[in-house]
Length: 299
Image (cartoon, rainbow, N blue to C red; front, top):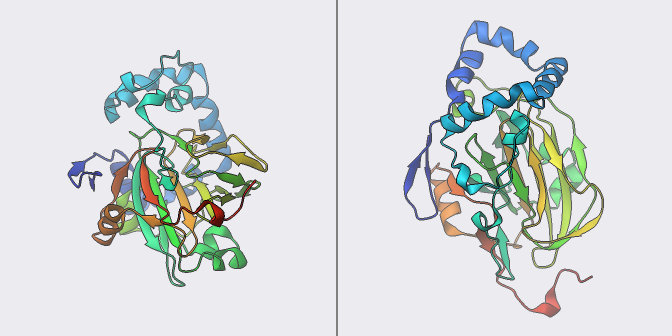
């Protein structure tokens, strides 16, 4: 796969899941195997295996396959594959942009941005979503009409922790049940799948960007969303929101109309049909209005 980095350079990354997905979705035998593979019982079993000590031997091959630089991460003894997969990065490796009116990237990944129109359909983890379907709420979706949707897709080499994109006050978490499916490009091109993914979101009343929605989407088999804060709480830009256990993952952020100006490279790359490589904590947009008296709310 080819992407662009923030300097506008083309970067390539081998997507290891393409061959597996090509078999599962592109052959008769593979399609027959999909249903048992996504059964809840098998998901729980595989999740338990990856949480156990017997899985720790998978960590080194995975690191080598995805060319992961372990010098970026805190020193730690890994007791299982998932403890390796959810490893913490050194804070200095992901500095948080300190500009008052900036929006920061929620996570490492490949980003695309879209204007939220009535007919917008987002391709997220091999499923097609309108904003209404994504949120399972027509009333809530209507509040974001003509706004902006940021979609960040994580791959195996990415750091799988995510943070809040702005200062504000979060509401309670909403969990939406679904069926886990992995997303790789070959799937989208060959076999459309219309099942929904498990996902979790909260609404955040931010100081300078009005209300936003920040959502995490799970993946096939053992992809799991682990959010730290469940209830209402004041949060800060760059504060850890949670992390994904093993499995492909996606973060979605929704902004209301006129609330944010996302950086031009993200917009232009999306228009060209190419994703932009971003890193958690870096600036991806801003709010022009900085008048303290015009905050959307104050504590």
